[in-house]
Image 1 (cartoon, rainbow, N blue to C red):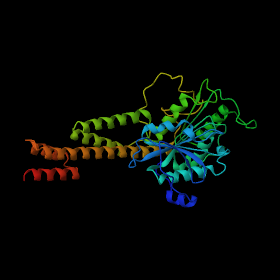
Image 2 (image 1 turned 135 degrees about the horizontal axis):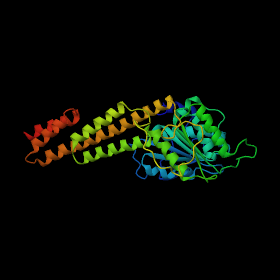
Image 3 (image 1 turned 60 degrees about the vertical axis):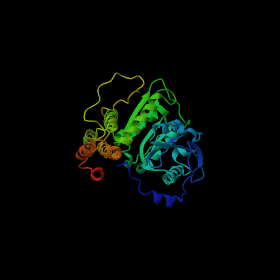
Image 4 (image 1 turned 120 degrees about the vertical axis):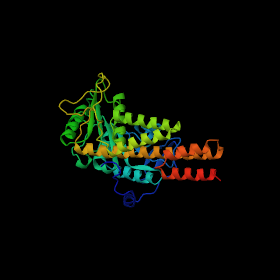
Length: 386
């Protein structure tokens, strides 16, 4: 499965002889363990107790990591830390140990921040060439990959990477070759690579942008966002939005002090985690009007209702990830309910209203199956009787 399958961070650290990185700032230029520059972007309200996704933005040829190829703004999501490595030319083919450079940086950042064991990688143009090749070489540490407008695409596919969600795209007017002696121009090569992915049973989505040359587009940005959401939650958009709505409704019940209904809602979500299907929801999304910015498809490729080419391995991987994601949200909601209930018990005991005992007994019935809260309520009732 693509999530939580990093073999051993400590083993990689020993292999590469790495040192942990220094303290962070909202944007900070640093030096990686190999002595090369990188740019780090962290949320302003970075929570040391929270676990974050590491998002890697790979620059184009001749560039550097500043801005992380436009991904720096993703820190506003609240659940990601973004890094933009600076690579020497040749990185497009993983030359000059640039793959080891990113692995080493990932290991070092794990010593400083609470990060998930997998990273999400994005690249445009030269960065696209690096991003998809790194994914193919290190599928055990990549949760998802977005690669757009690459000048070259790998001739070899690693079967171990077949269940890692990958989005690829190119402008339909991106008709130049990156180098004169290359066999295909960008648009043609992207089509060829998509067919290889399809033949090999990879989990991917491909789109082509009308009237777009060698430039990033709103369509590629949306595709990248879709890939990240799918890779980290295991859910396509309609299922994810429905689940997030249930979570928000449960939070509202907690805030209103309706703990009985909140516990019922959490129980339903827990059951959803245990029986989570593959990434597709139980029914296909409702038909939507054609979006001229949604991009064109590659003829002859079979897609699921969400536009993805998937096999059984991908479905199993996404089901695994969705169970983990739902389980995390359920655990967080359970903690919120417990915290709110304990605060309510303390407030009742402190204020001692005339019906304090009745209120506590009502809470006791609600939380009879929650040992910590039940114990606190019993102790509060006992103290009220003294």
